[in-house]
Length: 165
Image (cartoon, rainbow, N blue to C red):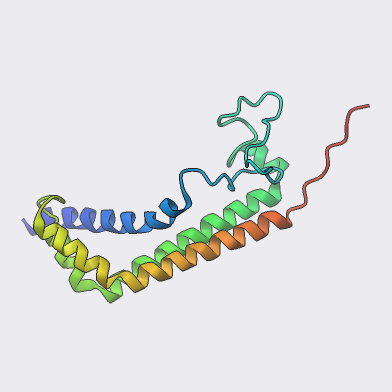
């Protein structure tokens, strides 16, 4: 019976951490637009798509093969940023696990029967309170990742296209 509840507790803990990890993303809004490959964006952060690109997930967007080939500096910036974010998340998980083991266990137990229970709400409140220092550090680390990404992208030199003659 204990083994059956362990996975539920693990899911509850993971969900709690996922919600806590989403706080910086919520603060940035739905679309910051700075993880596109290619030349730096204009004031609207929405460049005109190249010919043949339908504007959605075309060949010159995101982590596409052609995007990485055409804009390797920007691709490297995005890879470094993703690695930075993963490190910040890993550090936050380790911090909360080390600083709040009792609260984590209490939240896993309290939320095992459902997130809508008072026991779950109380346990999550206690866990969030205990984890506040770790979560603040996480937010700072993610902010540093964004700053490094922005600096990296600004340092990328984009060649000026030569008109066909």
